[in-house]
Image (cartoon, rainbow, N blue to C red):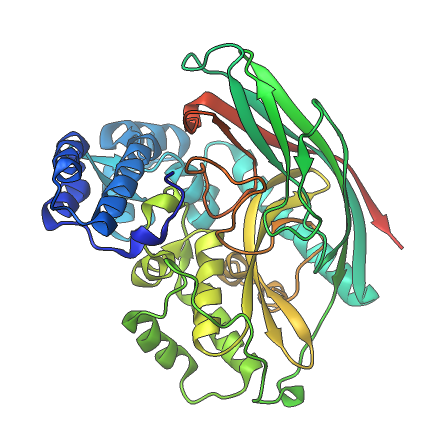
Length: 456
């Protein structure tokens, strides 16, 4: 089954690569079919070509906007927006684009990304709520950070509901579906996590410390069916202010290995790590230099599906654009390359008002143990001139997190038969039939916070 992603590190044939970059996916599929039917094609190359077919199917959906349609949308939403601005934003990398069928197409969420990362455009938005919501988010974060510093830590209890709705004309009623809904990973900052109830009896529940913990359901398909799970978890967020003078240059070596195909110590990463870290030997200060580089030299940008990126840290460090997961994985790769233990965490950013997907990192420095780094929140603070918040996210997290994954690129329990919608995370849930993976247009997922309580 197509679940092994190690072949992403293998090269594509030059003609297939040219067709892919030109967005000529129909011809690329024909060429790949010929290579796969050729007995001379080595099996490792065949694995790479099969993955490439999956990648190409994702991209047209991820880049739907023509230039004319995007310009019309921007002019309808931003005061006095000019076509020349679109060209400039495309050239500087703010508006993500690629060729689809030989035509320039823009990323599906590039407009919301523009408002998120460019304050001058949020200020020009015809909808005044865009700028107001950004200010509210910043004030909310500054308030909880100040509270953590006063009290030394914050503990909280959340309950929330995860929902998956399946609507597909490509499924037969009664056909068996295999559903994984994520559960809190207990450990690190989560002290308790439980499944309170669900729409259907779970066939199995993964152990509390499973790296991609989930409740598993086998269900007959009914059009418009909904599968839901109610979760509760308690989280502890201590405030730490680590000092370099307390840190020895001698540190443990666990969690410093490569994780192919993405956390790989390529020549480019080695050269860049040498530039960033220089002659520094203190592990805490090395990690801080990596954090500072990512947060001050790069800019947040929503990503195409991760499966379409052969090497995530190189993608980020060559373009200096990427979302929270890309920034977290780059921090992890550079830390590990420099001998600093580092791990992935992912799940939901859960405020009292709502929940959304988010990824971050943690790194180990003795005598402090595990510390956290949120490069995307740190970069946002840096761009806003919020130095205190920028410093906070090197070493700390607020308690508004639900860790659902404690490692990158892990198998679900029981294992999936087909390639996952997100093969690296399980933040929203996964579903497949017994014969194929379901497409992104066949189901929707959602998470809603039901209650929030600060604990003494």
